[in-house]
View 1 (cartoon, rainbow, N blue to C red):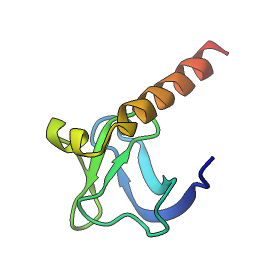
View 2: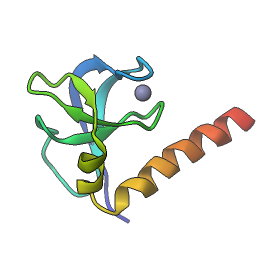
View 3: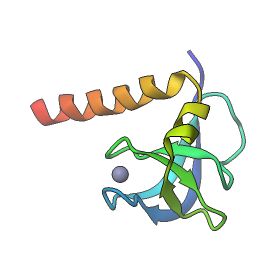
Length: 88
Ligand SMILES: [Zn+2]
């Protein structure tokens, strides 16, 4: 299993659910996220893109496609975690 590296990022709200996102994790990179990088809201599982000022916008479908085949799996995993939490 990959070791996930955590990074602090400037706090910005998710444009969809308003959750404050101030951290990011990545299984392969050891660099913090940069503008144009994708991230996923840990609360609503929306794929987001960092703007130049590190605020967040919702990703276009073609940008989600460019994230590679692992992305749908991560989105599913986040939704699954929330489902489990709600059920307990
Ligand atoms: Zn969100």
